[in-house]
Length: 264
Image (cartoon, rainbow, N blue to C red; front, side, top):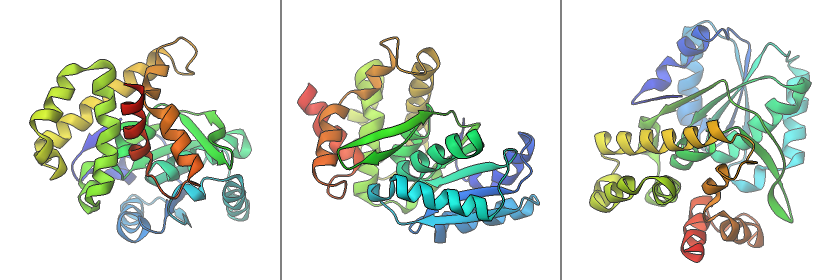
């Protein structure tokens, strides 16, 4: 897991270091592609890595089997092979969907997460949960499939609105509530700076939150030992809110915020 400011420029070099020299297949959404998709494309080109992009509509409604099927067809058309990699550039929806495709196409391609939303950085990109939704409930079809790398460029968060930042911080403060009281104190003392994305404080909180998630997952990857379930704090009510409003009313972190209050 790589965390830093402005490190998206290193994407191509980091892939080469890990033995991935292309072609790569990038899944992103139409909000992210014009900004960070193009930036990633240039970073890959500088390293001589051939990249093919598939752009999906933004939002939870894209996390479906039919959208996964469209990406499968794209991969078939582009003659993707098992030695190739899928890169998710975007928020949790992109990461979940691309990860599910990576886990299932040709029985598994290499998978790289490049989260560009707060919620994806501190939560969704780490831990290997990939999935698509059914109309009845969220994340009903999926697989545990760990990314080979997570590259989190905090600078990408500067283009988010206050609502998107707030819903992302909800996942980070959740990690404080379940395992790190000092992290909650940092939130209480620096709320305004965090909402303004103060460079130093934000980096510290994001790193700390990602470390908590990674440590929990390392001890209970498949949520069978009673530890990883802690990470679901607030998610029972949160997922119900999302599903009952057809995934287009509440952002994930907003649902989790309501869910944490309900559980508390």
